[in-house]
Length: 93
Image 1 (cartoon, one colour):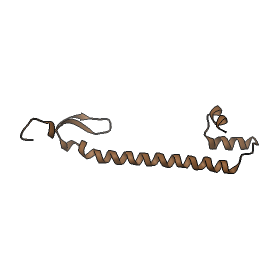
Image 2: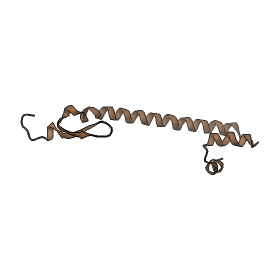
Image 3: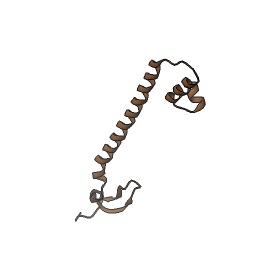
């Protein structure tokens, strides 16, 4: 199955369907394992994406413009960068 998938550039589920069209007998328990594996990969990616968004939101407050004495510019993601109040030598802040 893996060799067919690599040779024709398909995922395992597509390979199973194509081989069945060609008359190859494939165990249904193997297909269920492939489906479970694909679903696990999808849910893992979604969890990682949600964790990355959560981490970004947590760090956004400290990187927002209200913490800077002077904003030099913004990153492609919209986060300000510049001189923070803590690093400025101005006693007035």
